[in-house]
Amino acid sequence: MKKYLYLFSLLLLWACGAQSPQEEDTPPNVLLIIGDDHGYADLGSAKLADDVSTPNFDRLAQSGMHFQNAYATSPICSPSRVGLLTGAYHQRQKVFWYGGGGISDPAIPTIAELLLQNGYATGYFGKFHYGSKDTDTAHRSFPLNHGFQELYGCNGGRKHYLIHNNEKEAAFQTKMAKAPKPKQSLRMEGFWNQKQRENIEGFSTEIIAQKGIDFMKRQIDAQQAFFATVSFNAVHNFTHQLPKEYLEEHQLEGYHDWDPDKETYYDWYQKGRKPNNPEGRAHYLGQLHYLDRELGRLLDFLEEADQLENTLIVYIGDNGGSTQIYANNSPFKGGKYTMYEGGLRVPLMISWQGKYAKNQVSKNLVSALDVLPTICEATATPLPKLFDGLSLHSLLNGSNPAIQHEDLFWWGGEQASVRSGDWKYRWANDSDSSFARSSTAYEGVSLELGQFLYQLETPSPEVEDVKEQHPEILEKMEAKLDKWKEEVGI
Image (cartoon, rainbow, N blue to C red):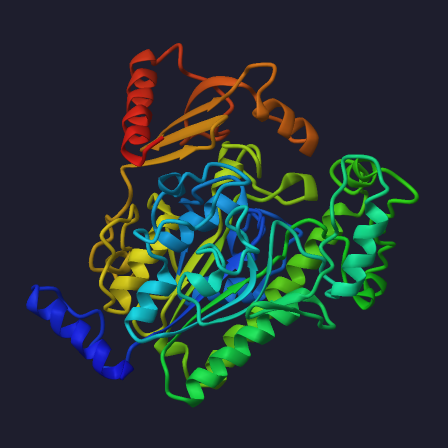
């Protein structure tokens, strides 16, 4: 059935005068890999951080195209993941910051829904985080309700790396209830296996990769094209939760989990973060080591299964690196939670061996929004009626190297930004009661409040505010933002 659906899609493209993305009648598999809070500079191939070793990320970059000017749609994970999976600005679904309704509008389909309709088997493995309805198994935001047939994952912003046990989480919740505010779960519960939580032993990064491999193997054995999303919680906070053998091998003392009987959550939280954790960068690099190793296992599996030339692979970070857990976003300012470049620029690599050229580096202005239309064109899947991205397929295969966005927009209620060519506009609410002020204070990140205009192609981006020198550009950028807000329904 899959083969016939794919052939039908090819005939539709031919009838419309479009060229098939491939000569064979075998549809490509698609592997979408998502990293969490991955620093822009934290790739060996980027050559921006001397302490980073990522041989498997480098291997992926060398097998395809590494995008150096790629952006998430938000500096935090839940909105950005909505944008990534739908190819449409998440503001269209009233998702602006944490706590939104997530994936809610059936008129805005996900990649999984589109590929499922085109005959693909679909599976989601790892972290999902779209909004406040993620644990409602009847809501559209739950992965099994927006196109995924299989799910083995964890919901929410964070997941304990080492403990996945419902009873241990329940016991901790009872203990935590007695603690003063603020208080946060360590998220020790089991993984979702379809619609039930399941206890499992192991390290989350390894578990997530293995479940993805198991799914891909079943589909390959059945000669069924697949769309697998492998979404790691690495390298998200709490990076100290590393396997004991790694800590011993690298002579690290480590850091303890929060104990509500001994200290407040805030005191414990701050001691584990920059600049208070002398091993903070080492913990982060430990999580990056395992993330790179498991990426290598995914690539090795596809190579051993003789599927690398029949698999489109995308790796993307969900938002800028969190500097408070020692991510490196060099040469850019800021990080997660902020609309500086460091909070919005993300690692992005796309590979399809035999179809896309190797060892390519692109400076084209691209977005997470582009993943959906790129996958659709590469798989001859009809595009939805509403999306905001661009297909990068012809950029990747070399037939149209000029493809890029003219403008990109960000809006989080208390922060906004516009990128237009070399110009960058940024605004952050400067009222005393603003969330922009209070949230950054809690997370310990630095954020200048007010209105700013920058030129990015400088040795030190976002250092010099040039709005006084270019009032006409400032006015133009504000007008672009206002027009876009009206279009997406803000």
